[in-house]
Length: 174
Image (cartoon, rainbow, N blue to C red; front, top):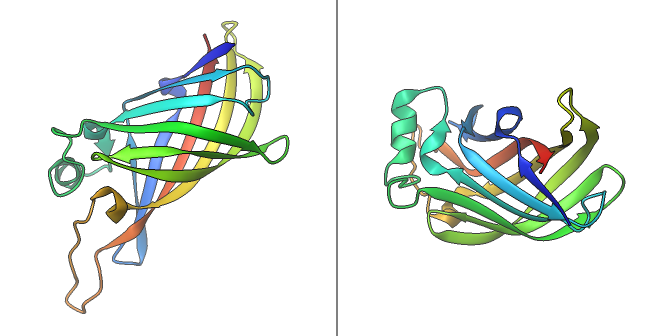
């Protein structure tokens, strides 16, 4: 059994959501942890648990971040953690995988499927074994109770329901 953990200083948990249906606004969660256990060298049998601090959301705009932390969105004081637990890893080829699991946001849990690209394993200058992954996925924020929206003067919606997830994850072998 090999234990890995997410190297937070070399990883990014990012998302994009359409604003006014014309541009994407990007954001990140800046505090998170993750543990991975595997018997294999290729991660096909990995079990994964991940948590992000809801109040660590950062969209480069203080006022918007405060709105996202409050009850209309993440309600971070009552639901401080966003969590993911894997159910299955499907290996497609040497680089591509599908990761299936349960995502919990604001007390609501739903299955999610992520596309994973495994970029390889290497040893860093300090002798630590590292593994790199890029993950992409999408979710509907209303499924998780993140229902806030507004309409424009023309009747269009301000925020898309679909959120795109983009993550760059570096693991370090424990």
